[in-house]
Image 1 (cartoon, rainbow, N blue to C red):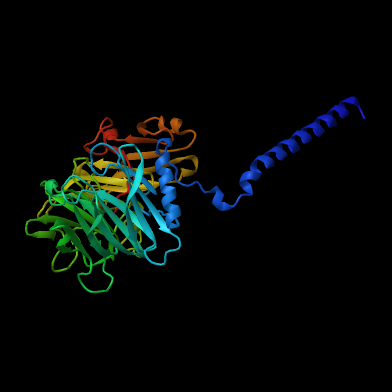
Image 2: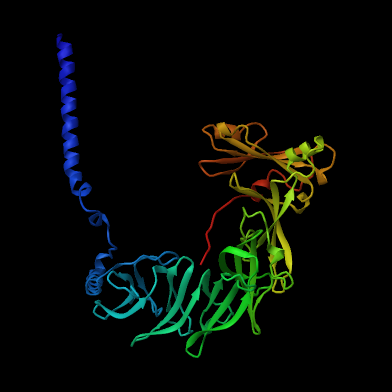
Length: 477
């Protein structure tokens, strides 16, 4: 064997030795984690070093109760240990800990409150027992108007069955202000416009028995030392699932609650107002039992403050011609009524009498993640067609045609919006005639506009101002 060959073998053997050595070292390091019991790998909630005394007190309480940490399913307060300023004096004097007593057969869930003393140490002051399979959600709100927050807990009993409780925390104990069963959702807010009286609770119930009127909203306010049900109002009869709510104001400034739900024919929004004579569903038609004015089968867009004026708009989709289907229908007697796949959205605001007015019009390209604020004149004068033939190279487009009332005359393309995501997106965006609408670093949105086809009310300078990206926001209770 030549000297060169011997050197090659030695290098190969030496490389193998180092690989084996490194593998052994890694195995030694990882043995401590790979071969430990699973419970040793779970990291329990840990507080900052300044709260080591509280951590010790919590652990002592857990040992005493034979408890483990409990999880909270939903909401903005899901930590198992929560540090709070419940009296709103600027200092976090209270720690709330959520536990499950493992040996308990009844009321296994625990909410333990610890209060910080002047010396910085914590002492357990309150313990609340709860029944159920888990803690569904937790909230802290001033329900009585005294400036101190109450504790609101939703206990999950079974699938879609919950008990909602509210507790006033006093120096001597806890006072239960409310205890009610519900199966949909709840909302806490100043619903009557009197913040000095504390916040109210709106409980939403879904029909579970089949009787008419089973879908309803229950309004609870603080009266004579308890949260009492003051009003009820019916929700739409055709609701089948997914009830959620959010507070807002109407076009004439009246506070309201928007209740959006899945119905048997799409999605709808009930609008509730609280007035001196009770709570009212201002969009529900008494004869039909539903909010027909807000019912929409196309549900790819949700109610939102589309024009950022502080008032929620309810979408009303309006079909516009699908160019390919329309042309097919004209050339084929077999196709008599093509189904449109394209919509413009009329965004409507409601006033306290249930009257609706359109505030703006948009076209949403949900597939591409953008929408366009349209001039009013486009409604009834445009058709749309997608072009995904070049999607393999990272280019998709939506083409707008001038075609007033789908006339027999030929439709003419006047605007194309491109979604460019390929490696050559900058080159594609700068092709002759194109201009950039938005660049988010990974995708470029560009357009071509031919103002000679139709006086559409938008020029090249205005179009980027009307172009928006679709942002997804979750709102629920």
